Image (spheres, rainbow, N blue to C red):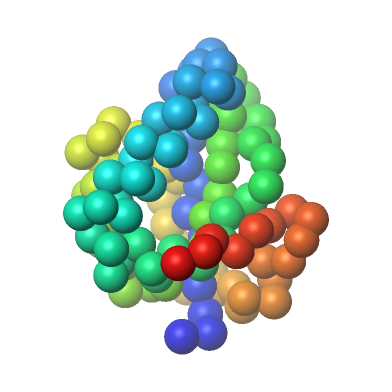
Length: 105
């Protein structure tokens, strides 16, 4: 698969980056342990948090086929995210350092 979609995960308003980072770590660890095959379809993440209003954000590039599963898992873990546009595709070449890091599988 050479095309990916971008998902933007949002912190709670006013949530410190450390707490948001810890929640994301717990989420991805859970996904790795319970859905390893799907976790391997997460290609990259941004190297730093960004701000959107009162929230911090972190972006990930994922394969399209895991969109429904990832949306459901994020909701289960009370992690907010922006709507995912399956038609807005990215290549792996757009996820390059220093702004992106490839996720090791």
